[in-house]
Length: 336
Image (cartoon, rainbow, N blue to C red):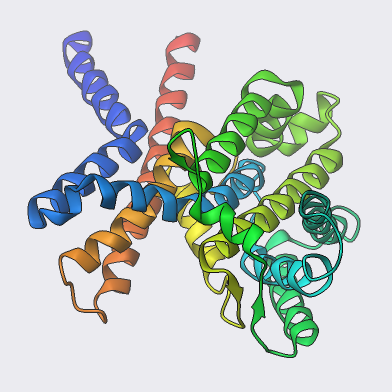
């Protein structure tokens, strides 16, 4: 009788676990269908392409954020770093005589250096990532405002081409986003460093006992996050051609939302760049566009968006609890 009762219980748990594991894809499909039924214009090809194009810059930032969150950390400074790096490029690099490719490389190095500032405070001073990046969020913003004197910075036409041209018929921002995702996927799934990132996020002490240099892994993921923030800022500049004081403001929350909506755990050790973060980034932009197309009250839009984020976090929490419960059950079965 015990076996008869336990079988349906296990099956229900497996079904629930399957639903929780595939929650990002199910949420994506459900959101797409709802907005598609509510607005015919939402399903037009031009709109869908524009959603992916608009999601590109936040997706690039979210890819860097995925590395950080996989280690159990957080980077709140990416929005301000987007502004600072774009202001730095517009003021010192792209307005001078430097070739555009060299200026772009220096911009990425600048982003990596800013990420290194976060990493050193976390690994050397042992300050928690939330506090460190909250402080640098304000510092990067303040430095950017000082550099620009709060004035708007215009960019040359060559940078505008990043956001307005196509490569093989595909908008350039989407191509750049695709390349970043491909590189990140290879690093996380086909290299020892990728395995170390997951190991550190799952259990830092166990990773240290296994011989992994935890500090080096943390150092690298924050540098990657800084570089992705600088590149995301450049892609966004390519679409608008100008940087003002509000540039990048709040984008750190969209990047975190994209990672969480993509199924990554805020506790670390679980998540994917593809399809996870890609789905999350497109979902963030799809919700934004869908709310506009369905003419939802502008004051209600943040509440709807927050409800979706809450649902994603709740799913992550339920998934973690269920996995823990199933693991305990398996241990008891082995002992008996």
